Amino acid sequence: MTSWETTTLTRSLAVSLADQGIATPAEIFANLGTAQLVEHAIARGEGRLAQHGPLVVETGKHTGRSARDKFIVRDAETENTVWWGKTNAPMSPEHFAALKADFLAALAEKDRLYVADLFGGSQPEYRVNVRVINELAWHNLFIRTMLVRPTAHELQAFAPEYTIIDLPSFRADPAKHGCRSETVIAVNYTEKMILIGGTAYAGEMKKGVFGLLNYLLPPKGVMPMHCSANIGPEGTAVFFGLSGTGKTTLSADASRELIGDDEHGWSDTAVFNFEGGCYAKMIRLSPEAEPEIYATTRRFGTVLENVVMDPETRELDLDDASLAENSRGAYPIDFIPNATAANMGPVPKNIVMLTADAYGVLPPVARLTPEQAMYHFLSGYTAKVAGTEIGVTEPEATFSTCFGAPFMPRHPSVYGNLLKERIAKGGVQCWLLNTGWTGGKYGVGQRMPIKATRALLNAALDGSLNDVEFRKDPNFGFDVPVAVPGVDSAILDPRATWADKDDYDRTAARLVQLFVDNFAQFEAHVDEGVRKAAPQAA
Image 1 (spheres, one colour):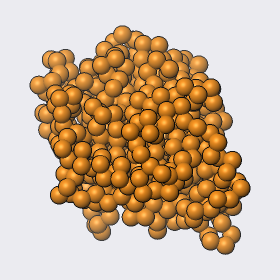
Image 2 (cartoon, helix red, strand yellow):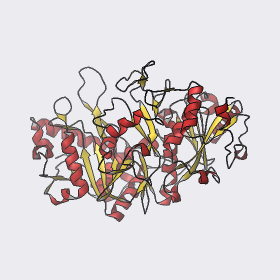
Image 3 (cartoon, rainbow, N blue to C red):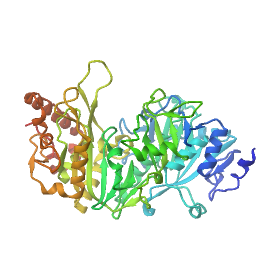
Image 4 (cartoon, rainbow, N blue to C red):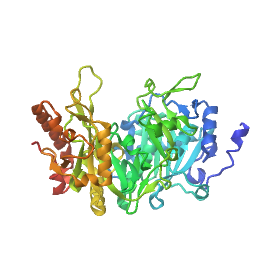
């Protein structure tokens, strides 16, 4: 052992691994800081330093989540509380027991382990104590960066409620463990344990905690949300949106304080970040369009996954997707200059649901009633350009319930009804913002001008949009502004922007039907008001 390592052995855990029933002869490196973990990662060949200080790592064949390899243990606790299906696949208690035994046996063979005691959630009343056990130093650094870091005083009495064991070297056995492949993410709410094996993609740990809070908070009346959130003069705004809709870009506004970019809870008193860090896409990141995020790629303490780097100069090439299209950067939230100090803000005044409608049917902004908001929240719609096949220009609709289906253990109606209640209780104004196409669908029209999107968003947030004249959209029934100062009125009416009006009507009717077909699964779980909020072809 080198001299710099010996200094890290002195920190003890308030609750030892042995106290948890985990027996291992491994040297335990507990609650190390950023610099120490970077030293370990580099000394062990887990990563390299880039020119300006970030740690650069590669995750191998797994460059994103292994959604089909995630399981929840089906037992008395979860039988009637989890929404079983494709997203939440069951694992028997017997299979989990075999898996856990093999995980513990693997821990017993390690010569060193990294342990971090962290909080999931920033509001003290609703946070969860999470212990993460890693075989890789950089994974420990990642999760320490992403979750909320306790103070030295809080660590002195830290008792883990939930434990994550993360072993990329572990290989699961489908026959023995009841899983699908050698990769496994197994969640046991009864034993309060998450086992992650066979993948080096660190985001599995982060999403494991998100899923945990999505399960635990609704019975407490707290709304868990896959969203970004910021604060302006009028109060807090929450942004829902799937990948590619502008969620991160639009919420990273230098004139507003950032609460967080991905996962939040909405309690009676606050919107609070589940995390203490950000996990941003790095591919083709622009210093002009996203200066705050770009700056994090030039700082010590950032962890860059699957970003291409020149081995000699250590310069980064953020445009090179040869390692992964989903290249990522993890950094503490205080790397963003305008982040809130408390990681929390007041309850929302505005909710913005973002969509990138490649069909070119939806208006650039619409005002939603609480019932319409619930409808669109449960729908979680966006449309992307279909695949990369030559000659394919037809958009592809995507519906991801609650704008985060993969992370929602309970039935979507639980989250939808909770949102509707909170909107009504707080008198929250809801908006649908389309960052997609205008003047025709993809291949014919063009992308919505970012300047117009920003102007409409600012008008929605500062309240001035409520003062303009509105019309009813004939297909979707929501209110659409007729004219907004500083915005070309022509783009406010999608049909008017299409050269071929008949084609618009056909495309709109097709999109309406896609919404209706998708919502059929929720109709029995919502009230009449929400059912009436469904679109109808004009």
